[in-house]
Image (cartoon, rainbow, N blue to C red):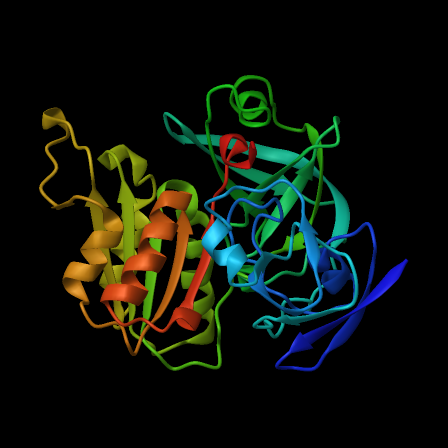
Length: 341
């Protein structure tokens, strides 16, 4: 059975099979609904059901609370229609600009830049290139049918090999392999590009870039894209970690701050040890932004990293700092634990 889905306020329509999710059908039709993890953990695809009913597949309760469901909200990555639907969602222009492809890649290098962070460089087949927007991600296709997502850490304008920042997670299906078994010249398969976390270039608002841990990867791509555009928009980058070693490309950020006239860099450490000799900002990175920019009513925020950081920033910036809710763009980095139900 096929259902018809209408998106408001755009009026765009697409068909959805009875056994597929609203998001899957929308992407197939080239409709740019926002999304992140596609697994019901991050909440990026949340929208409202105006007419019709859906059943939700397994998802994290924090991504869609009972109170939100009572208000008609839905996670479109997990919502399967029971009849024709009218939904309310903010469409993202340009999200389907580049085709999603399945490609092989050879591991060109594995660089351990911190005890728990590896930068993996991929070499694509000769005469092949992946077209994507800075901030998007790829999904590795594992042998058991599972997938693991990683953001590309470079802007496509640089025409450099694809690099990924991979954090070690004890017991992680893919990261255990990366840190303990993977070798240069190994062949991996991936699908991409995915995601709607990329720069809204039509805006002239000042930008806050908020990163925690390896959430720096797509933020780095955004900065490089801004440099490519020769953007004059003021940019403030806040990068948080538990200890200074977690800011594994701190020197690059300091170089940006020294060379770019409208760029400010604020590193924030939450759990420094005495022998770290840390003299910079301390505490939680999202709170540091609030201290420095109490009124965000004229800003855009791009946040990436641990879900707790992204969720806290979204809630506090909108409620306390007057940030317009539709000017908060996020890519929470969900883990296997986040995806578990």
